[in-house]
Image 1 (tube, helix red, strand yellow):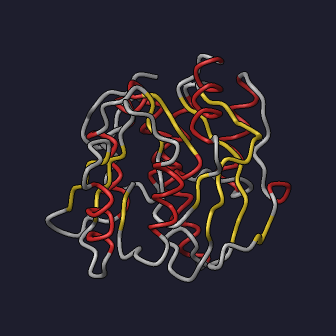
Image 2 (cartoon, helix red, strand yellow):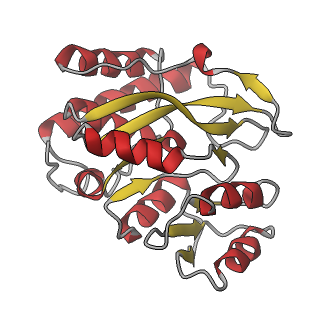
Length: 246
């Protein structure tokens, strides 16, 4: 989990996560220099619970680098990404973990509902569900749909193996969205699953990092970044000259 000024919703999110953790699981929280009570709240949750490990960036690094740090501190075989303001549906961990392991893939993205700041339903899964499938055409369609903006992937709705994480980190400096970078690599590798189950209530409010209305120029730049990212993945290298395993 990456946190930044999330005091309003983070307690509800932490409760929904911790209730699903086993004794051998871990919750890694990296605070990106919050100026509100977020760090104090997560620190209190960690007291007496050795499954929760809390860290704080020395400087504000932004969401991509903060998640990069969190991913590389993870020691478990399967990694779930978490935003600070959502709510995990009961049974989420088991459903996603079992689906990932049973199908022998390295990356899974699930469906979710949208809720407002008060927790009221905004949209159901039918408005933006990811379609299940497999094979070359399935993965090619996903990549094309990302490029055209018809579908998107959100880190809060995905999980992946530790071995896969090693192949996509560190994130290149030019990447706009760590979650799209991860999902694109999984599709290029033909190593992904779309789970139809709703495993998350994703909260939409005025402070969401990922809810932004962009200009035509910004959209054009985003497409350029997409092509650069795709080239890096296909060529097997990121900006640090680290070779991917694809």
